[in-house]
Length: 186
Image 1 (tube, rainbow, N blue to C red):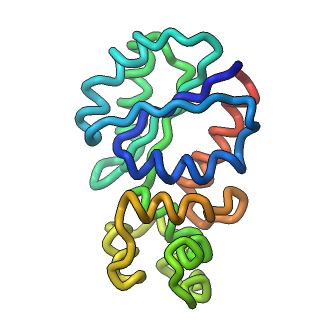
Image 2 (image 1 turned 180 degrees about the vertical axis):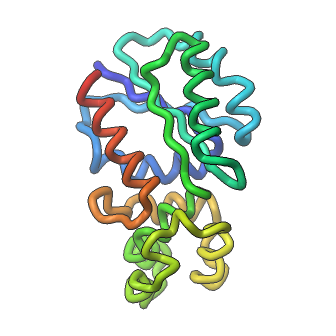
Image 3 (image 1 turned 120 degrees about the vertical axis):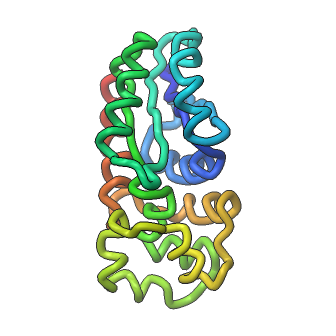
């Protein structure tokens, strides 16, 4: 049985993926999550955790937020850590700038997940046509939802409604394409 293993910066990413993955991968793929306590903890422990992983037929996805860093530099650093662990095939994906960009790319999912009417009608506004360009997506999502969005609970509620084939966040789309590719190859 194939195992898809995610190395994640924070619990909210796991909650989002738990909602999205059933629409991306077949049920015969086992999913495991290794959740860290922030990006520095992920980077400090990634090599060790990857080296220690013993389950055969496993494929790996490493994901973290860009925050204020340079997306390409972060991705290269994480890819280098994967190489050091002997897992150069690991998929590395960066949420530009934050995980909340994924949600702003699909306001219909936010509307359904949080039960707030009228949000999907705002998808055509310039700031939501490419949410990866927003400097502080979590702040924007908080304003847009009148403070109803909470990181973990919101990720759980919104994740089940995210449409993997209709999202305006380029970094979300790169994640989806990458996941589909690694489970096909494995």
